[in-house]
Image (tube, rainbow, N blue to C red):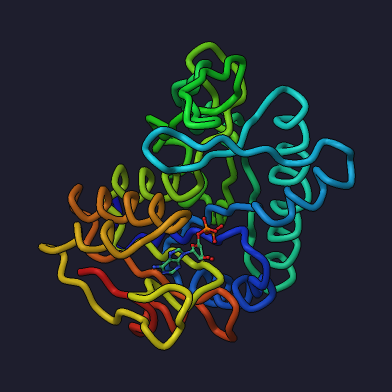
Length: 271
Ligand code: ADP
């Protein structure tokens, strides 16, 4: 599509400056930059799940990664927080800042389709076990025509998981993967991943060890540096670059003017 498209993933960790992000996004949108926002909601989800008496549970996979266990009740709470609280908070702030934001989940209009993984392998007491009945999966396709229609009609899309499985169920999919998939499919000029850290840190959590630049040809480096939760983000970034997205920026979503700063080269720039 439009080579000037910017896709922004707004992380769901504590400390994100929604007000500043909305302000910057609205500014860009008003200046005519095509923009698509995707958000998470991790920290808020953990809090609400605790309050509703269904505390978060995580599975440790044989490859060392962890993921959220999403049974039916967890999926319902996930939808309340992501499609409700976090999505509408962002839409409200964007509207107040002057952008005609429209909030959509991956279910709406079959915007995001994916594959449900009903059986998930996990490790417990050094043994590999299988958890069944999970509502998680991976996102595989995006309905580009719907996003194009929205952009051309002057809306600013604000997107959230879940995605719609091939069997028409809601599935919890990773927000970074969604943003990277959209950036790849629509050949965005930049993918910005805003999080509650200044960027990719060589010695996490030491914020002074920020890596400023990684050449696109050496994007695999990000996978070696990133740990735990950052690993998934790094994987999405690498896939985006390898699929032709010009630039991926890992930047701080806690500061004032987070998007302007990211686009001016603060954070970790891969290009
Ligand atoms: P979000 O919800 O913001 O999309 P995640 O919480 O999934 O993001 O991932 C970001 C987190 O990854 C950071 O808050 C930090 O705790 C962790 N992290 C792990 N390794 C690194 C690293 N090398 N550099 C930066 N952050 C890292």
